[in-house]
Image (cartoon, rainbow, N blue to C red; front, top):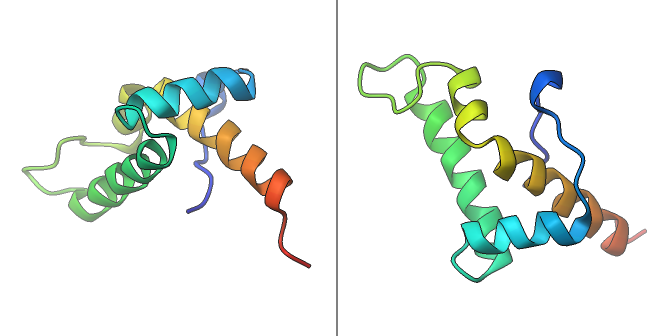
Length: 88
């Protein structure tokens, strides 16, 4: 897992609690499932990029569709990183 590079025009400020709630809803009650689902959505998008059957034609389309989720993902990710750190 790593953070999304959110375009400036889509960047949002939210609390860790708000972000956790969004990721938990995205994961249908499980925040980690929500985080993994966002990772999977990005992997699927990247793998299908340029294909005629791609769900999103551009990265911008993906980011706009998941505007709240990618911002929430980054807040939760950063919060987890600060909590757990690198283990050093």
